[in-house]
Image (tube, rainbow, N blue to C red):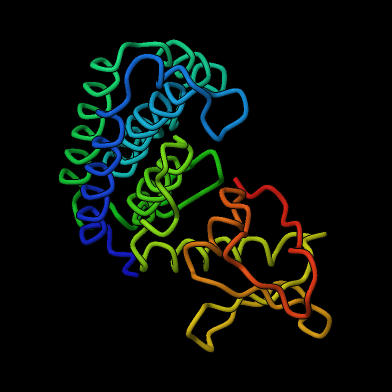
Length: 238
């Protein structure tokens, strides 16, 4: 999957359109129902997605202007904004999602080529600005699952699933205490190794299901373990 932000913005547009179609089908009671995220309703998830777009606009602006700007004013302000927006009626959620997505697209379009190489401070540490569009795409695709509306990992574009799987496996490989495992994609000899290979079980299946399980968004039902046994228990990723 490309890391070019100007190519990925098309994927962001497509993912946004899919999320908007799902959100448009939710009535007030469905928005108030539980999501896959503990303590959050579907309304919380949609409010977070909208505020996340505005947070990325802040980071893109910092990269473009050279003036430090945090993604969120503070963790408390972020939480308060999500809580305040969670119980809005369906039409207000849709309007907020569309407008915030438009602001993100406009901020991407305003970026000079040189600004993509800038390093900005994010809640997860310093990042090159060119990775911000990937970050927004990841938020859209993962939180679409969190709405618990029947959207499944199999609906992810294959390229997205592979990129997410590689990113998570690389991140977990650098963490202490992560159980060793070998991740093998169905129909491929390609493997990702976390920890020592010698005693690691092989977890195999479709790339989208591997990625979703590894980030705690799937029960691993479609996956197999060799030798026979239970799936490893990866730590919380994000």
